[in-house]
Amino acid sequence: MIDYIKSTVRNRNTIRLLEKNQYTFDVDTKATKTDVKRWIEGVFGVKVIGMNSKRLPTKQKRRGLTAGYPVRYKRMIITLNSTDSIPVI
Image (tube, rainbow, N blue to C red; front, top):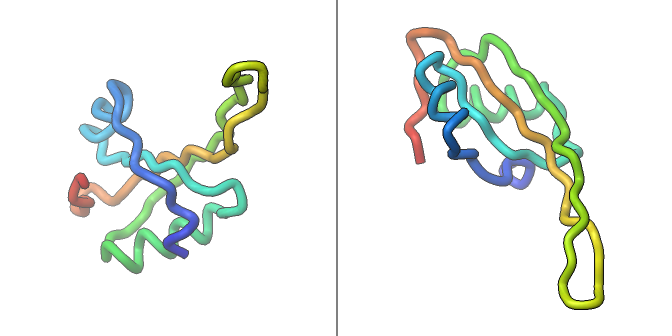
């Protein structure tokens, strides 16, 4: 299960979402909402109210003469109960 979660996302929008008790993670494309919800609730001991997921658009990358696409992943926004929180890593 830990292999599904790639990293936490930190940018201007996710900091704004933290005020609403929403956390953003990059996860593997094979991970489902149910898998991630069970993992978050089991590891952190919090109650997940809702989840939104989206696949980010692919962008072509070049390295010299070779062109290709980076590894795909999903971004999940997880809303927690108002009394719960996850320590920001």
